[in-house]
Image (cartoon, rainbow, N blue to C red):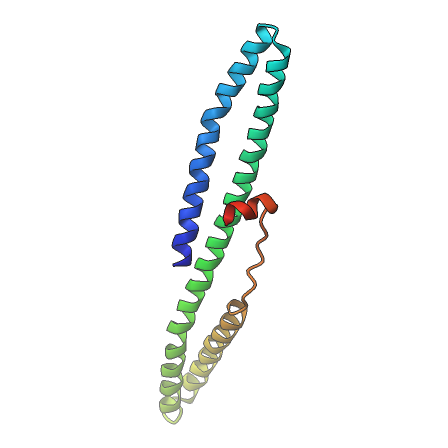
Length: 149
């Protein structure tokens, strides 16, 4: 559910960014036109609004990057969790084969033991690294947090 929510928010941010990209040239042209008509007060208003639009655009872009980062990390956690669920049974099967082959082929049993140890280490390392609840992504600023709400 959470990755879908993140994708929906990211789509919203992308749409807002596209809307701002469409508005910026209009304000720019109006500002130029008012400067040509020597309407300094109006030109200042358009320039100020254009500056504010650029700030909002930059903020939306940073929020979008933060959402993308969170989404990638959540996918990584999910994939690593899948890796652990696949490797754990494989390790058990490998250890069973190793014990059966111990009396027949001791060298192969020792190699299987090494492989089993590596797989167990991968499972324990992966599960300990990705069960931590802190993802470590910070929003660009307070305005980005408001957008994320």
